[in-house]
Length: 59
Image 1 (cartoon, helix red, strand yellow):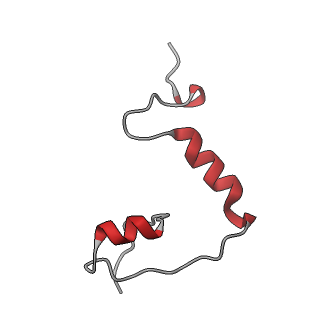
Image 2 (cartoon, rainbow, N blue to C red):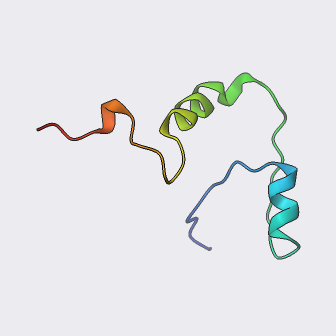
């Protein structure tokens, strides 16, 4: 059994860019089951974004 090292939320465009080498895809129906998770992930921002206020170290 292989160890899972990442889980991604991708659009069809993302999959098109990754190409045919990306084989394990499990489509998820669009609903609000993950709305809270998506909202929290969106709040984190991208790699160049500043960390959210709650994640900043205290001085």
